[in-house]
Length: 428
Image: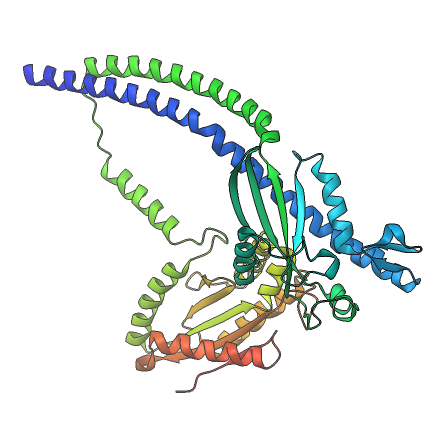
C-alpha cells in the first residue's frame, strides 16, 4: 500500500510540473507568434504582388502592345513626351507597381537585369549585393523566389525577388530594338528580376488582431488544461490506470503507419519505397515460377515547360490528373502503379508478357492524351502527353537493374522518336 501511495505522489508531482511547463510554453509561443505571422503575411503579400504584376505585364504585351504596333503606334519608355505613343511593357509594369503599392503597405516594385536599357542604366542594373545574389540564385533556379528581411531605420523590410522570364511575344522586340543592350534572347531566358520591396510596418495592425484572437484561444486552452489537470489528479488518486494498448490495437496502428510510409503524399499512389519493396517480392516469385514480369515506365512530356509556364501548383494538379487517368488503366489487384520520382511513374505488372504490357501501356498513353489536359507550352501537342518505355523479362533472366535499364532505354527511344508514343526494349 505504501509503495502504491508513493507512486501516486510521484504522478501528482509530474502532473504539476507538466502543467507549469505547458503554461510557460504557451507564454513563450505567444511572444514569438506575432513576428512569425508578420513575416508570413509579408511573404504572401509580396508573392501576390509579383504574380499580379507578371500576369498583367504579359496580358499588356499580348493584348495592347502588339495590336498597337500593328496600327503604327510607338512603344517607348518616353511615352508621355511623344505623340501616338504608349509605354513599354516594363515601363507600364513599374508604373502599375507604384499605384498598387499605395494599397499594399507602401510596397514598391523594381525591375533590374545584367542588361538594362540605356535609360535605366542607373537604376536597372545589379547595383547592390541583394540584386547580385538574387540574379545568381534565379539563374540557377527560376522557379524559386529569392527573399530576405532587412532591418532599416524605417523598420523591418522584405525584399522578395522572382524571375522575369523571356516570353515568346517579347523575344523579337528585345532582339530588334535599336537600343537593346543584348540581342540574342531566346524564349525562357532569365531576362531580369522583378523585386517587391515591402515595409512590414503597414502589416502590423492586421497581425496584432490575429495574435489577439490567438491569445483568446490560448486562454480557453489554459482553462481547459486547468480543468483537465484537476480531473487527472482526481483520477490518479482513485486508481492506477493501465496505459498499455491491446496487441491487436497496436498491430492496427503499426499497419496504418506502414501504409502512410509507402504512399506518395501528392498523388496518393505507391511511392518509390513501396515500389522497390514490391519489385523485390515479384522478382523472387517470377524466378521461382518462371513467369514473365513487365514494367511500364512513363513520364510527362515537356513537364518542366509546364511548370515554368503555369507554376508549380498547376503542375501538382496536372500530376494528380495524370495519375488518376493512369490508375484507372491498372485493372488487376496484383499490378502496382507507383510514382518513381518527379513526373516519372512506373507500373509493375507481374504475370504479364510483352504483348499484354504493350496493350496496357498504349491504353495509358491514349487515355492521358484523350483527357485533354491543356499544355500550351508543349512543343508538339496542345495537351499533356506521356512517353512510355516497356520491358518484359522472365525466369532466371530477371534482374532488378536490367528491368529498369531496359525500360529506361525504351523510354529514351520513345522521346527520341517524337514523344507521345510507346517503345519496347527486351534485348540482352
